[in-house]
Amino acid sequence: MLGYVARLAFTSLWRNRWISSVAILTTAVLLLILSGFFVLMASLSVSVQALQAKVNVVVYLKDAIGDSQRQDLETQLRAKPGVVSVAYSSKSDALSQLRAQFSDRPALISAVEGNPLPASYQVVLKDPSNAATFAQQISLLDGVDSVDFKQDTVQRLLAISRFVRIGGILVMLGLTGAVVFIMVNIARMGIYARRQEIEIMRLVGATDWFVRWPFVVEGALCGLLAALLTVGVVSMGYHRIIANVARTLAFLPLVFAPTFLYKLAAAAIVLGIAVGGGGSLFAVRRFWQVEA
Image 1 (spheres, rainbow, N blue to C red):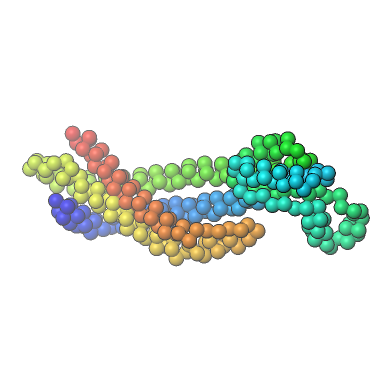
Image 2 (cartoon, rainbow, N blue to C red):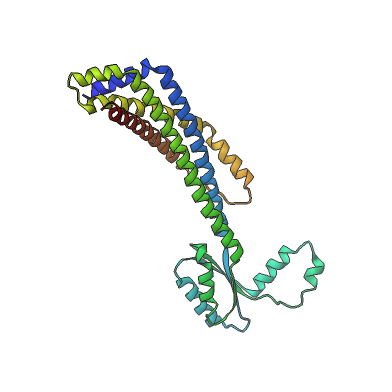
């Protein structure tokens, strides 16, 4: 049974090689666009995550705070859920950072008398969306003078993140739908070209699935070949694309997972087989309903 289905699928694929080639190339182009968009989405996601990692909650301390009270405050900060790291910056550290930042403007530095800058804690949260709630809670602790969490920056980052996710899902669904539409119509053409053969097989007692499976396997093979073609093109240009993205966004510490390319290739292959076989199955079922 399996051998017959596979042999018939390969024979049909070769017999209709021009139509199959059109299906493979068209599907490959759409899968390539989808893969490129997926790489872009992943790059934007990494960029947003890198920016979110730079958003710190700054807890400014009162000048009169003692060492023991400061240690207690640090313990409370570290114990808060969602806190990734806590870094202390003393008054002298803050002044040194100010002098380094404005080293090219010595007149401004010389105008600063004493050290008016407060000590502070730099707190990194796992989820920046909790910054407002966290800041409100911390501001009530003893020894805390004020809390700054750059609310506008956090809100913009969250808005960008939502837009990237929603937009990416919509575009990917649209491209996937286009691939399925093409495979369905290509399969429908093949079915109508062999409709007399199908009718003869049904007249001699062949089951529906016995007739359907060769078409499904043929569609899956078209999807697989299209996916392999896409993977080959993406593999050749992937590192160049990533290098260009990293060069364009040089101000961000972008780190791409070394397994990302393999995951992308696996996703393209699975999607190609699924839409190819699924589209052919849908076309065969529609043919059965029309002919019934």
